Length: 299
Image 1 (tube, rainbow, N blue to C red):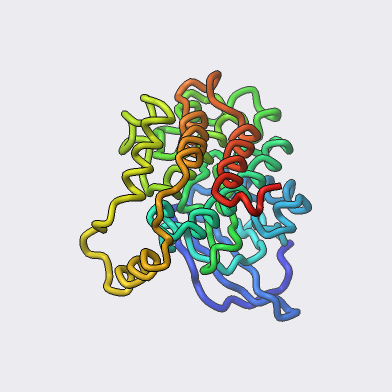
Image 2 (cartoon, rainbow, N blue to C red):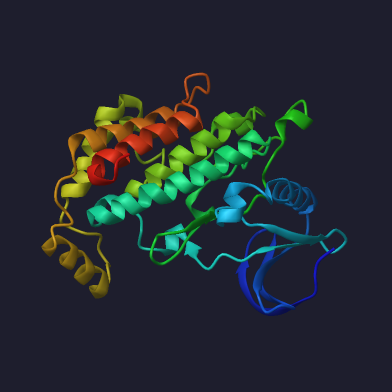
């Protein structure tokens, strides 16, 4: 059952339902998700996944919404509220065009999410839709949360995964072919890392990804050095960039850092799942990259 609560305001709407900010009887705030229309499978997937993950380190740390209750007839799910905005609505990406401390913050954010996904995978929960729009971040980039577990699958409980009609920009071909496993989320996590660093997808950098880490690292290097910014950038945004440059925040990044983080992206986005690095290995590579970027904090 769902504990007593009071709706405060609608804070989101998607194809399958709406989200509301609610107040609980004790004054705390939570999020109520109402799944509508053909969302029966989505509702079951979200409830089952969040129930299974409610006492994980990731849920307790706020990197995964914590399950608080569900209304099966009304298809409502109550979960903890995360006070952040979707990654695309933040100014974090592309982090390679931001101050060096922001680049480091983006990697720490990604590592938190990768750890959360890894913990979920160990409990037979495959998110299947890890992407920037499902990643919430706080304004200071110190905390993040992976939401929308409505596409999640549980491979050990079904002989074959549910088919996806088409492949998204952050999804592996595995999903369309009904092959679901930890390697599925490894692709999504690596794709999200690429977007976080460069705000690009597999389609936009297909040649660099196929050519290998050094080619992608060269692209990262050019993005870092580029001083001409997107047309239509706000005056405030331009001022912020200029302040970062004056503070030395746009200095060239260490070549080893660029090659290492590019390696994580390329290995995680391999089209052949047999050649794709595991999420555990990707986390280790990104941790090495972070250590190169912040040697004083390494170890």
